[in-house]
Length: 223
Length: 397
Image (cartoon, rainbow over the protein chains, first blue to last red):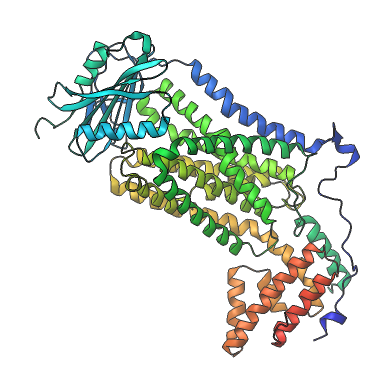
């Protein structure tokens, strides 16, 4: 085998010249930019604007038309149900009996009426209603860091139509007021949050209380 | 027909030119509009991600810590694997980082996340909540996420036109874009899971999500984007890869279909857990089979580049014909080379040396690419290293 240092040599001893990566040919410059890079970048900008501006604007302009009728019941994960007020709009959540193909209801549901909003959320929780309320307060304080909406006042007891005892506390914010209620059905925690404009009064509306009272878990009575 | 050394050298020059192998990549290119577009969209994405992280850290700090640590290890393992499968005309590592960052921040926070929320809400308003829950994700994400990730390759081609030259380059960069997307999305999912028990038992609530996302992740965004971006290169055509519109469109459509099927699995399977697991496994197997097929078809051109670059070295007796075949071949070829060493009755130490010679030859190929085929000091040194290892002389360095 020949000695690689002496017998092996390519034609050139120095690399062929290639212009610097930042160099732009004079006939491809436009306002100091490489003209060839403008079209692909504009295409990506167009896609970004479509995704981040156009679609959200269209979504904001399209109203919800799913209005609660008398007798409607919304169902959540873990067989938790509540009766929304007739005339309110369902912005998320599913009516009982309309189970998704996966067989599982979502973990939250929201109904709205003007500036009033009522959200029910469920999840696993080991403890009682007061402990759940403490946990909700801890998480809320950590997320808001003392700003925005806060849980205020001493918790009071609330009992649903099903006879389930829960804990409730008022929430206040710069422009918002409302109430949070917590229940625990076995190991299933339920959080109800109702908010509205602060000038609507400090006491929760009767409609909100009716929705909270209607919270139940299928089979809970039997247990 | 006899091929002269001069012809082999010219073929090497052509291969180096077409492949872009060994060329440096500069990220800072103020005269490149794509550079500014990249900075803007990645900057927005980083701000969105960090503000979410900062907002949720006090509440879900444990879950965030676990998710970030787990997915950092996951990302490092994938990085090693990607380096392991790319024996050929390698891309600059800096370019892969740029691809990863696009996928992690621009494609998620600046693009797809906004579109997903809007489309899902529009589906619910138009077709009802139940329909949106069943099919919404499967008919939103394949369009928003695949195009948000894939559009990054358009910017990368504009930023690195001399490096991104083949469908295999698109395949590798796509995988890194997908990895970035996957990791940031997984961290976001872990944060969501941490809140499902009202912020209590964060680790228990999020660990299942983290494990599931890790296991399924390989057959998800990484795979989708690798195939999609290979397809995008075929569609557009590059100097090292002639345009093949049909193949390009097919490779763009396949990951979108796979993504749609993946996101609709729960609806397709129904309430049966067994059916869901079966479909899950079947989808992963089909996706991986397609990935392997795309890898095999795209890597062929890169293997040819290696052969063209190293053929003059074989003609000059720096490496043997068997070594050239192993270098420019697939895993089987390299295995056959190692078996050949065994069949020849070599001792274990000699077989090990044969493997080291192959590694030194790959290093020589990289030096030749960096030198654009010229006979520089570094190239000559790399040749002496091949000869030294072959002769069994210990390194004096």
